[in-house]
Length: 383
Image (tube, rainbow, N blue to C red; front, top):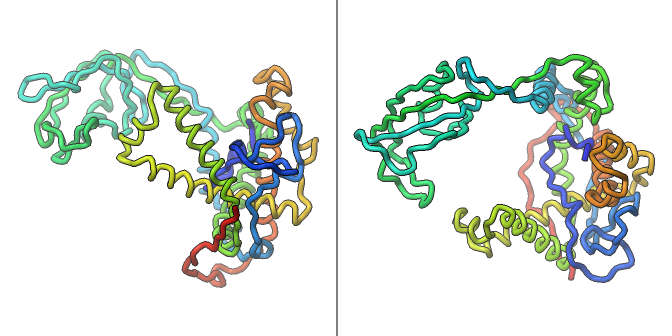
């Protein structure tokens, strides 16, 4: 889905698409899954059973530095856009550079003897990733396709066995890796032109370089303002969690993890063993994550209703129609089968609320912004 939130860098987890088992209610909520028709939605946003007593959300103070974007920040954002649209080109001749992904055959030997796990063929290694021991990747820079090179290296003294996590028998030992470069892929970053913007930046509704810079400037300022004031809003807001709602969302999130690992022929217990974590500790992390996300979302949905904000049908169609028209989905119904209308509406409304709150900030000199110690979050629980 296209989403205005493509640029927004604020670290706020979203749970719009979580649907868990809840209790009976006369209102459709994102957590009780009562709305079966994915083509319908409450355009004022989901009503949750978890509720909040809002703190101050209008007129929050923002220092001047966080009310504008610098040229360097805008240029960095532009570079991110360009790099996200880079394409890989395969090279069967030429020299390796940092950032290239080399396809290599290698064999490692200690005291002239090959060791288990030290040999591979057709291995794809991104140069500069730090995946291999010091000197391996840098030793390939400048080497050409078809070349074979011997790398005289040494395992770190604290080198660990990746399977057991314990210090490896190879730790501290000298090693020679014989490496052959088969070919490499290099990321080709496009040039910033009006033609590029018109073709690749349709999600931002701009068609020129000037339009893209203006859009990114706006998004950066929005992000900086929210980063400056959002924690203040969180701290001043009291939340009453509906424990059934929380439990349902935790269960749903856990099921998503299980399905993810099953897709890779793994089980959740395999991940927990690798992470050295008990299932109880894992569940506790999920509970914390759900509560944090839920608070952010319920605040936004509550502000929307307090201020009469809602998503229009026109805004909704402007968001989803390009994906349908581009052939990504056969029809609007197919799109809504993947992205229920309520989830899309909530996502758009969430962004609109963030933008509305940022616009209502009071810009003051940086010297007027006080640094305060964060107070514990006030929470209560409802059953």
